[in-house]
Image: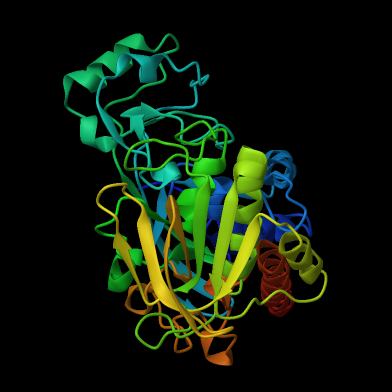
Length: 428
C-alpha cells in the first residue's frame, strides 16, 4: 500500500481538468496542502482536446501553460495521475478516502525521447483524438501532457512489444514489473471536479451517427481542425479523406429533448459558431457552413461573436430542428431533411460533412459516486448542506463553458478552505 501523508488539513481534488487544476492551485496558493488526483496519465482534461476557445479564438495552450507553470512551482500540491477514488467515508473535516493507483510502467527517468514509441508496432485508438486516429502502445498522450512522461498501454504487457519498448529506452525508464497500488488518506474537504463527457451520439437514431460515415460529433470536429490532430489540421471526410468544404452544424443534438438530455448544455451554440470559423480559416471563400438551430443562446459579450459569424456571407443559418439524416450512396453525402420554420419550407439538403453539437453530461453517473451526494435530475452535483464538505467544481456541478467552470472551481476552493480552517480552529 502506498504511503501518502495527509491530514484533515488537506484538501483532496478529484479530477485534473481545467476545473480541478484551478481549484487545486487556488487552494495551494492560499497555503493549503492539496492532493490532486487524475485517473488519466496527464492533467488537462477536455480543454487539452480543444483547438481554440471562443470568443477570442485563442489556443488553449496559453492558459494551460500558465496553469502547468503554477503547478510545477507549487510545493503544496501533490499530483497523482492514473489514480482513482474508490471509496469515501466520514464527515466534513474528517474524510477517509481510498485510492487505486494504476501502473504507468514508466518511471521518472523518462526524458520523452520517444524511442519506446518508435520501437513498438502495435497501435490502439487514440483517446485524445476521440478514436479518429491511432497511437502506439507506448505513447505520450499529447504534446502538452503533464507529467511529460511516456505511458505503456497495459494491453501490451507480457508481449514482445513491451520487451521492445524496454530494450529501446536509453535511460532505463521502463519498468514492466510495476504493480497497481492502493492507498488510504485522511482529508478535511473534497472538491469533486470530474468534468463532463459528450452525449453518446449513437443514441440519436434519426441522425445516423452509427451508420453514416460523414456524420461526426462536435468534439471530433475540434480534433480534425487542430494541426496536432489526426489529420494534421485538414478537415477531411472519414469516408474518403476528401476535403469537406460544405459542412452542416446541427444544434441541440440530443439536448433539450425529453428523449435524451432535457437540459441545455450552454456551450453548443457557441461551439458551432466557433467551428464555422474553422471552415473559413481552412478554405476561404470556398468553405460553406450551415448552422441548423432552434435558437442561438449567445448572451452579453458573446453575442458580438454571434453577430460576427452571422455577417459572414459563407455562413447560412437555418431555423429548424433537423428531422432525420439519410446518406446519398453515390456521393457519401449526408442529406438533411426537415422544415425551415422561417417560411415553413421543406428541405432535403446535401452536405459534405455533418457535425452534431452534442451536449454535456456528467462524467460520473449518479450510481458511481463513492459516497452519497445530492444531484439534480440531470446528474450534476447540487450545492447542498447534506453533501458536507464535498464540493462540486466546474462541469460536475452544471453544464458550463471554460470561463464559468474556472469561476466555479475558485468558489469550491474557497468553500474547502473554510472547512479546513474551521477544523484547524477546533483543534487549536
